[in-house]
Length: 567
Image (cartoon, rainbow, N blue to C red; front, top):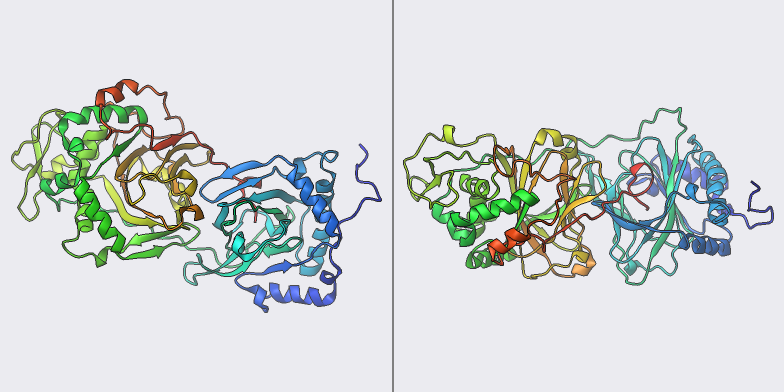
């Protein structure tokens, strides 16, 4: 087929200022680490890159006519096109011409300037960021990538609009990103390039202006296919996982029941709660904590000490500094309850899972320093607790269960990504149970603000379930190996609002022989809406099956080869 680009069509041409020996020497100096643009890693920001500005505007107009695909996951929120190589030349002649220009002219120019040999493989997509969109910290490091590039096409872009390309330095010990040390504003007809290497950590900051869009064409030049790629710099060290602990005996029944809504402590409700859990693999228990206790904990949270934890390629959250809590702290009592054997007993009764060994006639002493009540461990769902003699705890308690727990605060800019270490070892983690309790002043947290918790199966795009922050509500989610979660970036729409979460994850959970033994959360576990009969049986506003969780969203990955989206 004859090309639709005639010999008289306008051509993309690189600015002559970027072709001379003086510029080439600057490029070599940057790559060798002898220039201010060598840090935190070699990068180049070339203003007025193309000579024909009217052709740049035509390129922008044609790009805007392409179909855009929403992309949203733990790392990014934006709209992207398919790879430009998949567009037909007769329908998109300017984009086709630009891609050929990159493969031929720009690739040869880049090899000449840098001395780096490049293959003909090119990834090229369009990216469009609207208000609230962003791309979080990552390194672009996938096999074969040599240089990342982006041509900015948005006009009239101010500092207050956000959307900067942010470059991070590295912790010298861990080699993880530490903090932003340079920001590049996306200016029309500027061309940014950087070498993909072990420390090429970068992000795109949130677009803050309503009605404005950050538009670009971006992608990667690759090394030749027959070249073995050894990325420059040291690889990050493996991060130490949060230590797991065994459930503690350091609490009393009185302390546990003082915190919880009596509806959830009453044995008469356990069977009904368990039936819902068997259908859904999750529970949403509203008004979960005693109101007075909840308010006392919230008041203390508002004045407690928090520290920002990362690294930013994994999370950016505020973590409660427990060492600074007073001995009689409400928060210390709350944490003690949710790290106790007593809470594993209640979770066992609510879910039918085996977090705690339950036998008829058995009891464990939950007294603190020999004081307090004993907690009955009985198989009856309806009989009230009764004091019985203490039995050997080694016989009666499932000692394989371990837990991780902490309290976080989420403000604007906070997030947590799916942990790549958990992905790598997901099969070793076995079945687990998440308990998440939300605290805050705003009763209804809009999902458009971010901050929701999304569950998905590793390697799959579809979101299994979404948990929206709802105050004084406990979200309880049972997940099988390979199911992970993340907390979506809290965007600028949240303003000064924030919320807190008490997170407890119990590992080593056994399904056992219960009515919920097949109810672990996986990509196929969102069942039909068959809970109407159960909901009527409850007749209580405390039990919420549907309002706080949204199901079946898309967790789309962006770009080529599962890339991290557009810069």
